[in-house]
Amino acid sequence: MTTTTVRDASVRRIPDWVLGAAGVLALLIVLELLPQLGMVDARYLPPVSEMLGALFAIATTSTFWIALGQTLLTWLIGLGISLLAGVGIGVLLGTVGWLREYTASTIEFLRPVPSVALIPVAVLLLGTGMPSTLLLVVYASFWQILMQVMAGVQDIDPVASDTARSYRFRPLTRIRSVVWPTTLPFAMTGLRLAASVALILTVTVTGELLISGDGIGGRLALARESGAVAPMYAYVIVAGALGVIVNVIARATERRTLSWHPSIRTEAHA
Image (cartoon, rainbow, N blue to C red; front, side, top):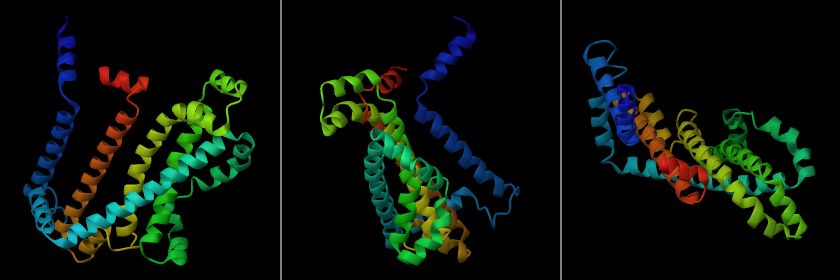
């Protein structure tokens, strides 16, 4: 066994979470040293120790937890609506050929439209509260699930589809026994992507674009406007931590749901 092979084998034995933690630690050290060494202006980028101090200070207030709860509630509701609508419409469009062809141009027209372009419409229709944010969150994350589910329906084995047709399966039976087992891995991928997109829209729309000031994004915008630089970065850290947690939960859910799928089994034995 060569030296390179031994080195590669030792690297593979290091858990992924250890490598990830090492990367985060290295970033924190760099952020701490840059202002300390005068390489950046500490007024605009304070040391990470100051950011963490501000984070611990705001974490002791009820305002922070109320804002965090509001953000998570908006994210969860928006993701749930997107999941139900994306799976239902995706299966319908994927299984009904003429309906898929009839709506293809409409989907391709609406899908590239960014959610931020719909902010004036959302505010005019629903005001500046949670419903406006939900509309934009659902719009952005819905497409992630819809396109994945439609791709999954199109990936069904023709032999299995013909067999179901030969045995004259009822539509619901065909969906349950043929369509859904093939589509589920695609749907889980769409859910994982939609979870991140929904969180991004929840935080940035409620904060930077000022549709609602009740969530973490709203507190971030308030800290920015008041010149509280360290608390502003503290809220940025919270938003980033939420993103990591959401991704970890989504991946764990995907692995648990698809424990029977060859891709997950291969990943587990890698």
